[in-house]
Length: 513
Image 1 (tube, rainbow, N blue to C red):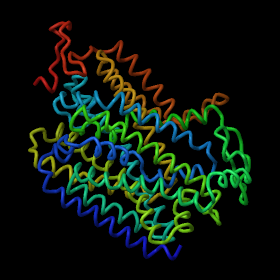
Image 2 (image 1 turned 45 degrees about the vertical axis):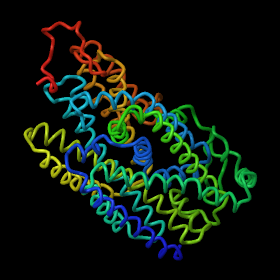
Image 3 (image 1 turned 120 degrees about the vertical axis):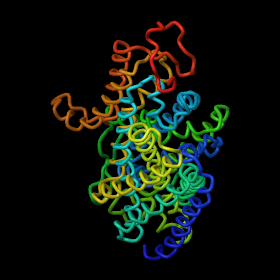
Image 4 (image 1 turned 180 degrees about the vertical axis):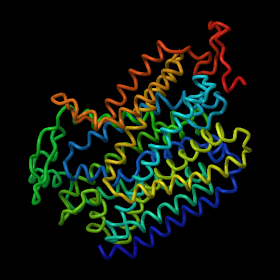
């Protein structure tokens, strides 16, 4: 891959400098904490849609997902189907109501603040609990982004893992600290465009080189028909692909279950909170879903064409995108295409850094440590916490691991902890604070402990993705406690008050004080 080094270094350098320039450009518009946290709720449909997509599809889009399809065949694409469906339902069911209520609920700037207002929790316990879950899982999630950067640099340059982590962390921190949410969203628009083009261009180039879909089909079936069987998982014996084994119902459910995670992802939900009007949401939904479907389809196709087109099997399946670029296109074109991988990694990591900083600043510093903090003090604290979270994530990333495995763990944690609670908070007006707390605790604990619980089940051991038991357990806990423990909120998601509630039960909510 030596011919790639100079073009990639130049294209990467230009791209990273451009991202830093955006941070300086947006710095002058980041005057208040609302600007830093939500961009003043001024995102257009296009920016909100592309920013949500870019925040969602991290480095695993061009590393983990093509690698999974390359290693196991089209059966691994069930995960893409689940994600596409989840994206559509999230824009349809969550976006309009969450945008409306977070503004009416005291102009909530974080999910934790929204939940506190929604369930009228004057004790701040719910806010503290949800913010803790966000910081813990997001720190792990950011680490997966930095790790993906290390994989990218290793695949191109043959080394420099620690150097890659350092460069990524510094660049992301600089423009996030300077421009906050606005800088992140502007860079996402550019990065999402680059990702879309790369997801379409690389498989198209490979198909032309192969001679079309017919030639691709022939080459894949020559290895084994399992590569094109949605119900099978192909294997590899060191020399060639083998028929492998059929996918079980549990395996398919586990892959589809990734779609359940969307309802609880703070870095995606915050895009719904920041769009300038609910009238923009239908347009944003169409743009966002189209972008996601195209990128996921392209990523899966990259894995398949890699099997047919590559002359040499890469040591790490997650580098199939890099190997195709090196073999099929001019080094300068390859450099531009590989920027898409860098963009995917950065666009998720910066979102997660920002949401973590907001949780630490708004939900810990502002709500507990210094409630009288000025707007300027909050902005300064938010910028400092971006650096702190990045340093911790950097330390975690140094331990290595598989990108898709780390993403799967963090994704399940958020999906199970927040997904059921967010949906119930928007569609069940009489759900209680106890139900929300029980749902968050049960969902997060199930995900954290499932790898220890599942082996203890003996003959009933399933091996299912922890998202599934996590969401089921969280939903059950939220429904049970939400029905039988505590009082229903006086105010519904729409901002109206329940006038049938006894006057003696009217709480002193944060918004009423």
